[in-house]
Image (cartoon, rainbow, N blue to C red):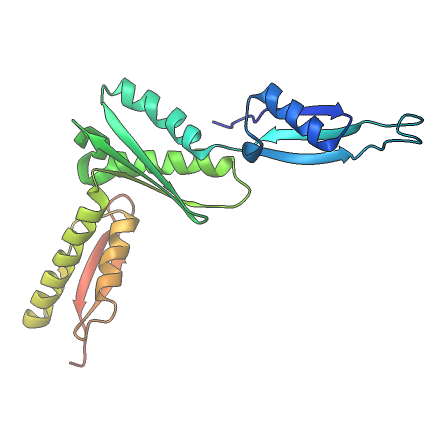
Length: 212
């Protein structure tokens, strides 16, 4: 979904007047506009001989909130889910959290539906931006809770491997969840981690560190 931003060229006796006319016609505030002065114009001799109007090009700025809503609302409506959409933005990241009833339908098994929607939303947003931003789509803080669960799992399994000196393989996980396991145990004294297999069944193996 490529968003076509409206743009207009306007001329008037001054740059400021031309900008105001363009913003009025686009029905946007000046802070929501990208402004390019094509010709500053001049007042001519004695204010009327050889005078020339100013010309500006005004383009509406991309509204990330509208972009997110235009993508998610039809999907939620199709799935018959009533959800509140909370959007937070920074220069490097756009975070979207959904809350409401039946939100588990958006999450899916092991977060697979949520991951797919996050991937598509990221494509939509970054297609319309000059530089890449990270897009995080969450539902009822599922990702935070899932991360806490995986950190506890990693530590528990690592302790067992260290105690028994027997390697253990975890269930298949996506790349984001595997990174959590690797990151949690990267400085562990007695185990190392390794990903094996092919997507979507790639798994993390927690191995006993030889030499201990």
